[in-house]
Length: 209
Image (cartoon, rainbow, N blue to C red; front, side, top):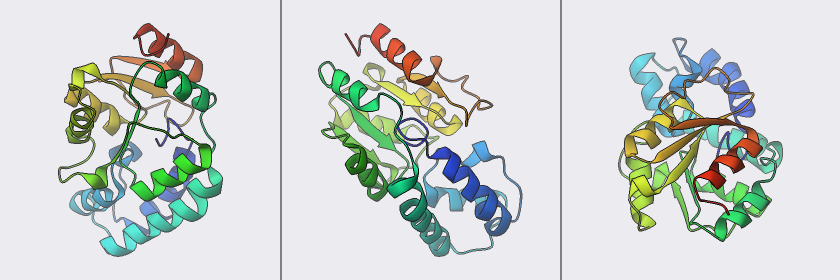
């Protein structure tokens, strides 16, 4: 969802610079270390590797507050052509949103932009296993859809997301935007830039006719 369906990364980058890295964290992590991870696991990761100055409860609360008040309810814009893309995909394949974001955030985006119906909406909060960059969320998604991972195509924008998809054995498309020009997508099967190239790749893979 984040960085692919909606342009939320610009909002999260500002939040990280202004609060996460400046006030909540002792060290100075690279942004790619946390982008794509579940926000609860971000606190665990930062605590273990850099040290944090706030409790996990406060950390999660600040993320939730920023998500609802700034990012999703009014801030983000939908990827150009996403509604039409979803409509065309429904005629050929199953569609899932598989995200590190909690269901409450995903629900706002689904309702605001009219993305339903979907065959599956899976959050990292819904599984007991570790989230991205580990493969489990995509393995769970494939299983719930009645598919093997190598029958699935995943579109990911972050380093951690691409790693998760690749480790699960899916066909991974790295999605390049203005916000992630520097991100290492080398684990992806291919990299596209923007909605037109994404549509072309999905057509070539047989997801669209």
